Length: 315
Image (cartoon, rainbow, N blue to C red; front, side, top):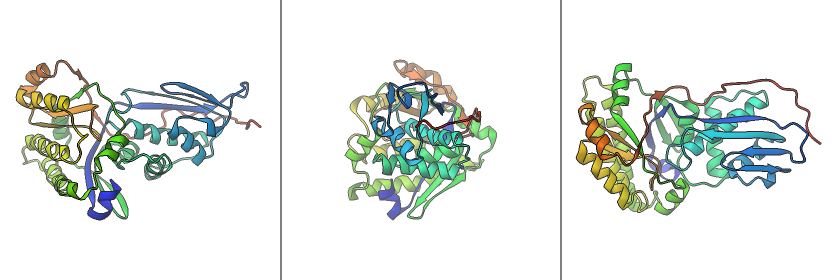
């Protein structure tokens, strides 16, 4: 959150994983009485960019002066679930727009412009980490300060990274929410929250050390997740709910060493660190929730198909 890291600095450990959103963009053939067609959870057909209801698409098209397009969006995960789906869409859409115009945009440019799109143009409250993660991909430490941010790969052996992946279980709580609403209601930069936030920031160094030091006990990462979740719960009344607290307690009682609700809070996905011998018990305790297996990935946003086209603007 800029309101915190501009003054105190900030850092996150972040990874991308093998669930994707797909943005397909082409110029709309000129046979229709509308100039732009958008297909996401609903379909929009409009004659001017200003008529577009979806704020991210409308503002991105204005920003990059896009016209006469057909955009389709689909995703492996639900929106508003805490896994960076909106930022992944923003990064992917910008990448697709540049490709359609025959231009290349690097990771830093895409991250910066996605942050600008969501936080400034769309006026959505929130942090910067999701846009950076979607643009860069991989397992990184991202440092923040008043001058901006830096992305540093976390150097971890393939075996240890695989072990970490195998010890993480992810579940969908079934609740979804707008993260910007959670951020606004929680006032995470309020003075009384800064003690917890500074402590959470200090834990990043310790968590990175556990991951990268081959002599460290990897299970300590799970214990740190428990510690940081308890701190995060104190930063806002809407981070957790009674139902979420009950789910967390059930997982810990069944043998999870720690976990956290992903994203701003209020619902979405839980991730738990569970030793292999305890996973059956935790799976049983969480049987009412959807288990979502995942694998870490390193790619970040990429153009997976590109066909140059002859485009004659519609007048």
